[in-house]
Image 1: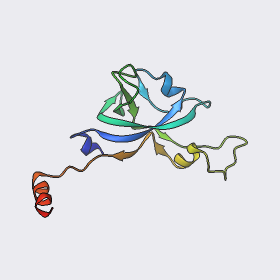
Image 2 (image 1 turned 90 degrees about the vertical axis):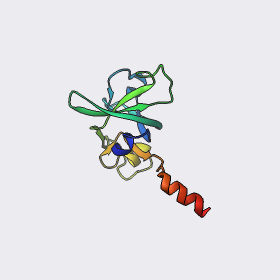
Image 3 (image 1 turned 120 degrees about the horizontal axis):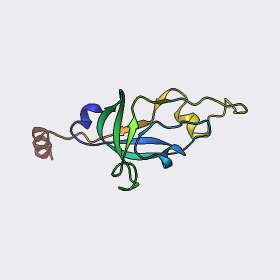
Image 4 (image 1 turned 45 degrees about the vertical axis):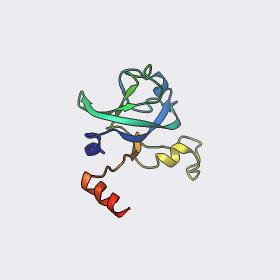
Amino acid sequence: MFEVLKRHPVGAALAIFQPEYKSHQKGIYRGPTDHNSRLSSVHAVSLVAVDEENGERFVWARSSQGCEFGIDGCIKVSLDTLILHLPRDGDEITDDSSLDKLLFSSPTPLLSRFSYPRLFTVDEEDSKEEKD
């Protein structure tokens, strides 16, 4: 993903935890920061650059919330944060039906499901056209 990102944006799925995501503005988004945080969805974003701040690696992710969100429509997402679902008192450990238990049953980054096109070289494109 990092090599591809040097050439063009990469699509990804971002785990959205509330209230952190909704209240997030300029800092680095690290997912849940409180025991009351809840996974609300997984949101498609476009990753546009990798950077570092105070020793923490993060990726600039363009969101579909528009230019008013984050910094000109982008959010800094930590690449160093891993999420793990830990059962609470009263949770059924065998009940794997909730989204957070399914997605975070082992340590998992906030970003997943990377997607990007594989672009043909000029020679590959010419060869493909000759075969068609």
